[in-house]
Image (cartoon, rainbow, N blue to C red):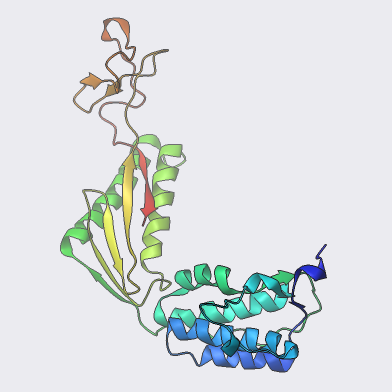
Length: 262
């Protein structure tokens, strides 16, 4: 249960206040202006009954957002308005993180007034995607690896499902406009990509192969494609006589999965 004495202000915003807040957010011309519009209008409304304004705060007298609380539905509506507007600048993910530190707290009030119309889609009309020819070769190679795993182990096998699911999931992220409307994709390895976004975010879609290991009890040997073996530590136990049993056959395509690395 919320303890009202913890907060300087705990109340629902009026419909007029919410309209002013979302209108100001929608008119913002940059990601920075979105936060400024939100802060000035939300805390301007909450501070006014106290006879205060944001102009009275600064580096030596900082505002603590945690001392103010509004209903959860209104908190979500304001956050969604900010993130929707940030889509115009490819800063949705950044905005979501920024809001955590600057929004007031929230309390449960399902009857609180919220905007009746959903936020408009403010993403740019086009997403310009540049793929180097080397990256195009990598994309084709990744698709072939998934197909090879399905052909060898079967499309119902965990080897195929993990590889195909992680590849398609990460590849689809390249087409997302959450990080900007211009994206460049380059090669970062035989089965890995480097993605540079308009927002400044750079991330990799990296393939992690599953090493072929010996499955004999107690053996810690790793088995290379040519049949040679090695262990991580010189004193790691290995099979007596070198009679290794590989975790997947020598002639099989290496299983693995792709992951997002920023």
